[in-house]
Image (cartoon, rainbow, N blue to C red; front, side):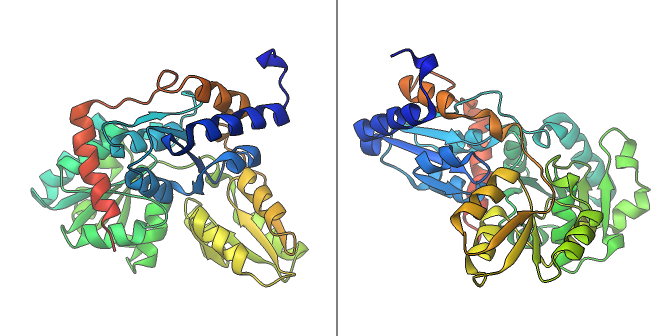
Length: 350
């Protein structure tokens, strides 16, 4: 049969047949933001932290196919065993936020901070939404990786190691987490990478405890306080939950905030008949709405991640037909070793 003419049902059956053939040799990991059909074919669905844990724990499989964006598949490749191959259905599924920081500019910022506060004063904490080189930098400089699920634990860990934390690349997750830990506004500053000392007064940097890289998620920065006001007027009894990559103002106005797994739990545990309005990626919200028909699940504002959306049934099928060959995710061994240190520190958080 001509592959170009296969419809979705035929592609799904083709993928399922390949899964049956390979059994435990194959594991398909799917992020919450994937299309519903892709999630339905995954062996495990979760947020970036849960998927990293799953990739690190599975010792039996030979092939890991990661349905997410590239930095997630790259992290899985760092954590994979020597006999395992990690592939992604579309190599072009990147992340704008991850591209907002690179190793050279982060190294420069770190050195400038240490020139002010002293060697060993600053602990780098990198959000999972970053390339392996930045994770390696953290591994080599006493830092670790975090996700939106464990950012608070990661910052507590880092503050136990040094007086300052350089948090990158998402300023909003860092700001919201710092606020939740009780940091005062003046203890948090934003670092603009194209300016000396990040555009800050050196004395302000010496006083700061949390230095926030000026990066952001295009999906979550679209949500505004006006969106919340409009939804509250339309649905007075609704509960609003947003992702912590949203701005501090939006998180403060919402009833709750949390990672995608926290959002899923919030919806699952809400009483039947509840109205829940969610500020995150639209594919995830629409899937929750279909999975919990006894509740009204609505989007705060429609916001789609086009990179997550690049992965479709045809590309997944092609990947499974070319296991070990197509879109293999490779990481330099030296970078992998250092990045593994930073990821292992994250996975060890309790």
